[in-house]
Length: 245
Image (tube, rainbow, N blue to C red; front, side):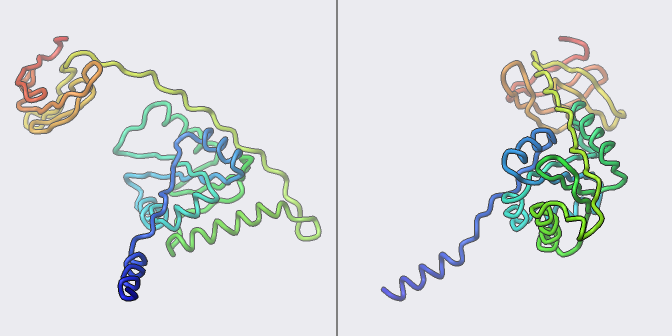
């Protein structure tokens, strides 16, 4: 019995520790409202997620690590302010991100701006080596200074109070309703063509879920011609002609 208990304890000790991954906002106003309610700081991550090498290192070495997730859950509300080159942001999100970059005079990526619960900027940093432990320790110094409040005149020259940052709300885009399968366009060279069918772009041989009225249809692109495309829709063959509704 003792041996059985021993093996149970060892087995439990070997189980992975489950930690909650960090939650990231893209709406800075919503993040600031949450930080105000929960008395947390806001971390704004100005990043080029799909092209900036140092941004990718910061994400993989720090933000994706459980240790940072635990620290952030207790102390921070996280906001990704992304400026990608490959993926597309919707127009409202891009406008909001551009406005934030102008507000905080961002000149390079990654740039990390820390705001107190009232929205006042209190620190700026970027990538640093050492993983989440070093990054968290650096942030913790700022958080402790924030808890103590401003220094007294005897300690240092008082700093002019900073104004809280104001954020424009991101308007919700109007929902897009798609009708029947429609070939909306053909692009590319003769040997490398691409078609746009409803909401999906496909090349020959590719398969995608396409929005059709109130459901998704699995579409496979079989052949792209000069003014039409041969596809299967949920395994049913058909040809869509350009310009036909």
